[in-house]
Length: 82
Image (tube, rainbow, N blue to C red; front, top):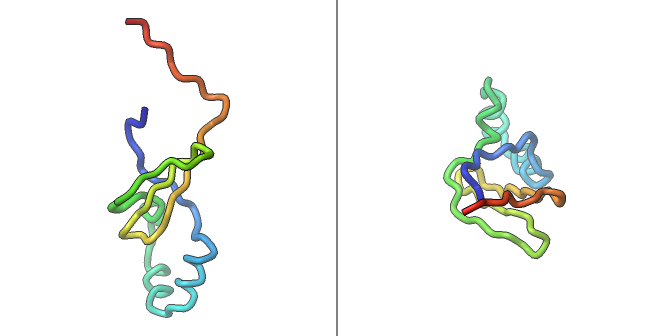
């Protein structure tokens, strides 16, 4: 059960870093950002999928990225007594 999902990216992927580094305007914009915690958050997620390895994959349209979450293998589903 997912109750909320905020996103938690902490660094650019190699592809994203390449895009930023190739664009002087993007570099200037990134340097102006003082609170970078907001960059890690999802902004207009548009798709969600679960792959064969139980990874949760979210596409974020505004930030132009995928965020991949790996399920904890030892997690046990809670037992509900009805």
